[in-house]
Amino acid sequence: MKRALRTLLFSTCMILVHSDRAAATTYAFVAATDFSSGCASWVESAPPRTAHDCVEALSSDPVCRWAFGKVYVVNRFGFDNVQVLDPGNNFQTAAQYSVGNGTNPQDIAVVSPTKAFVSRLNSADLLVVNPTTGASLGSISLAAFADGDGSPEPFKMFVYGDRLFVSLQRLDNFVPISPAYVVAIDLATDTILDADSVAPGVQAIPLTGTNPNTDFALDVATGYLLLGETGAFGANDGGVEVIDPIQLQVLGYESTEGQLGGDLNDLALAPNGRAYAVVSDDSFNTLLLEYDRGTGAVANTVFAPGGFSLGDIEVSPEGELWVCDRSFASPGVRIFDTSSHALLAGPIATGLPPFDLAFDNAESVAVPPLAPSQLRILFAGPNPAWDRFQVRYAADDGSSLPARLRIFDVRGVEVGRAESVAGQTLTWNAEGAPAGAYFYRLERGSAVVTGRFVHLP
Image (cartoon, rainbow, N blue to C red; front, side, top):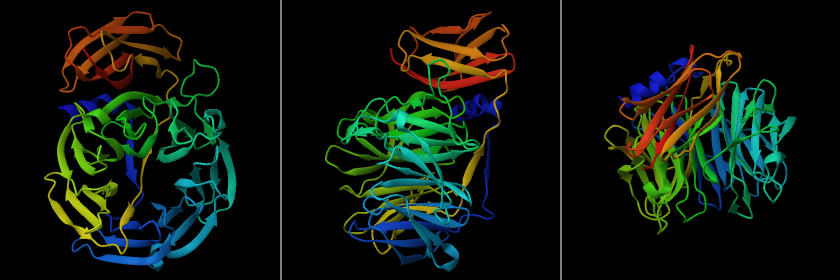
């Protein structure tokens, strides 16, 4: 019922998911490192999951992306370059280019065979390059969102249709500064989209917590993006944030570090709706957990190898959970069934301990242009809500159509509503409602906007 509700709530957004790959996934590329040296390995996705170890040298601090038939390795701290590998030539280096000495690149988002963006922690500019040659195509300044050290620390990126989302860690001498942000960029114009039309200037999306520290994850059923925020290490002050990439607003935490029991290191979503997180506990042991998306509570401990040994986790398009296990005794890639959590394979040795991985597929989400009469949420909160939840909206058509706010619990049952004839603020009285996650649905004429919030008694 919960997943059916999410699909219903976002049916009006016309979110289309498509893949530019011609066939099923055939391999997982693995960036492996022991932090003194690094290498490129790959694992065949079908049984018997044959591994091909260390076919090319990488830096000791690599992360990887697949796009348009190539593998892109971002060689990070102290290396400051992008390495382009050719799968058709056993992943040998086809090109390698600098992105600026001392800039500490973190991610690459390839939007076409001739255009890509590179985020760099030590630069307030988002670099635009030809991904194959490294030729500069310009830059986008993010300086307006910088903290005291002059950089907003741009980190991970995600392409969503004609928009690019960039997380800004905002770390001043490694101390998280509030608020952290997500910037949305219009790929047609390479300009920052304004997330708040009321406030002066161009605004980013302010996050609930600080120090966004994971990849973005896409919930295909709803169109939402998930992003993990670690906050200060050891403080359990972060969580999994839900972001509406169409309305450019946050919907609050889906799960908190307090519920997960430690610092959030990574997250992944499976096609069956299950959500996974890598968490580091107070003793620096990393755990692979499944959490309940309705309550945020831990549902299962999938893997607990002990020590700070878990790296990247990814879910393949076929629905398998691939885990980079860096444990000292038996490092390798482990593969779990996301229905039963049975271990399907592993540890699959990759020469050096696996650190980051990517599949030979690429997904993008087509976002239609917003109609002129589309509703815009100006405020939805407080989140979490206590005695009331309020939605303030604007409509660009200038008419005074009545609006209706409907509130649903996680079972899909409508538990309240509010209506307005001509006003632009609607309020639900939450007194007496059980604690938990709720969905709201704002309806006005044929336009619908939805979101999610948490109620605390």
